[in-house]
Image 1 (cartoon, rainbow, N blue to C red):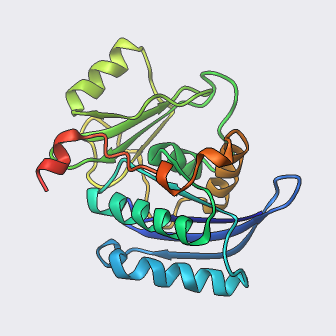
Image 2 (image 1 turned 90 degrees about the vertical axis):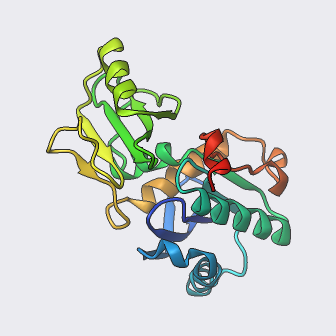
Image 3 (image 1 turned 135 degrees about the horizontal axis):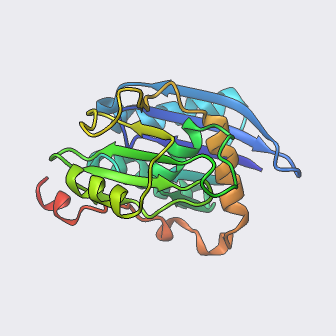
Length: 227
């Protein structure tokens, strides 16, 4: 199975093509990484074509993308491109929560199935003084929420949750420890993200994931109104 993954929802452009064998082993055929998100509207399709040519693949069997949260414009570009290509190629296209994929990518394949053994928090910079927040308790991911720093701190106290790992994008959250890790274009393990996406694909019914089923996950209802 040939997989195509791409992402413009944050401050980067990622395009990855990989092949999965019958044992779910992933072989990366090509990987393109750029830190030019404002150019995504015209660079993304070009990068996808380049990645497929380098991989000697005419078209993938599946498309996987992060469908948000993130930049409103970036989400729109990622999702609309995936929908268009899925319709053109007549293949399934699936969206997965951005924060979930980034936690997988930044932790590589070290996310432990033992509850509480390796806990994490990720705050994606949502601008307007708020963050898109996701927790990992060592076993499962929380729902991604749009929260202010005050609400995040209150949630941490209520849940008695003290993360082992603190991750963020964009603006440094002022309640984070100085040892927190900033997620950037180059420190995500895209091979792990592709492998995780493959496991997600195995649990889905492909026929239910045509281009019409791929929807953006903006989370912030008022965000669109302010654009």
